[in-house]
Length: 106
Image (tube, rainbow, N blue to C red; front, top):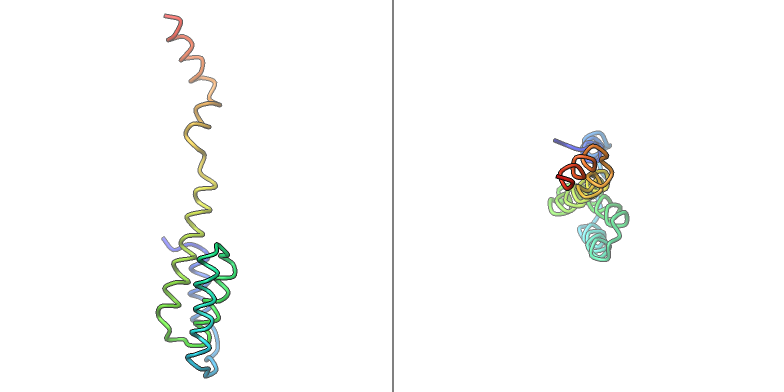
């Protein structure tokens, strides 16, 4: 399933006007900046830099790959934040606690 961020990136890439011709060096600088930001944990900075890299050089496949990789990481991170921990769910379940107390009493 494609997440909303990925859809937005794909739509942005398909709907944008024809890019201006820029040097491969500029695209590579953006890519390197994105790689450094990602290594330092700055996901927003990495996303911005990789987007600039693909704007500078639309056929820069590795920059697209890195952009998608980071978006996937962000989706996974958000999914983990929303998912309750099993231990938290059990601790707050009153029927489970009362059933456990009954078993222990027997």
